[in-house]
Length: 95
Image: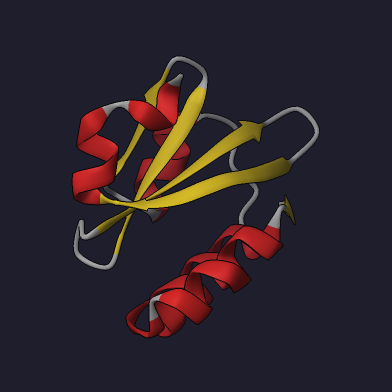
């Protein structure tokens, strides 16, 4: 898949150094993937959900949530934000 919005990931890595390895793994996995639907995503990245059209990837043992829009037809992922589990739980990301 083509991944857009990687600047979000770069910014997150600068603020939270513990994300470097996990985000590198996610990015490599996503770029190599040819997912056709959420079920296929879950075969590769098990802890993934879809909420109101946004795909939520659990990162680093569920400490962080990577929020993206996945277009399976065009094989494109647009990274929107990366938040902590606590920030995600507030629901502010979805407004």
